[in-house]
Image 1 (cartoon, rainbow, N blue to C red):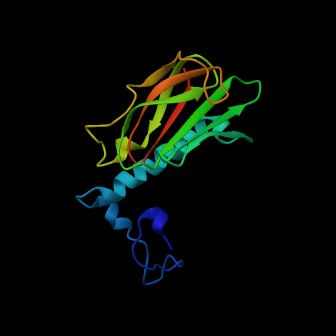
Image 2 (cartoon, rainbow, N blue to C red):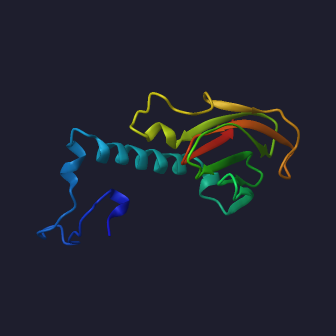
Length: 160
């Protein structure tokens, strides 16, 4: 219990109890806990700002067991808000991975979990702020883009 806040020992649900979560770790010099807090805050902020990430429309449109990649499309019907979420569970980075996108044009990279690996990771494997979906249709979509998928990471794109 408590893994979601990086707690590594049992803790009491009573705030006055003897075993409380290690909130003091937020000030540790290694910054692991504070970096995890930043990661969690950024995920929550992204979900609040993007209605498509809270809506009912979701389509897992691509997976590869061999590459250990999963991609899905979230959108709000008629609102023009589309989000592509790509998870890579691979142990190495894919520097040129072709994926379908619902529409052509520029897709802004709004989240890249590789940033949080030794936050702020100075050597982030990413998409330079976004990708152009100007390739041929793919995975049942009208367009495609070549993306960078960091190892063991999640990247999120929205129509720019």
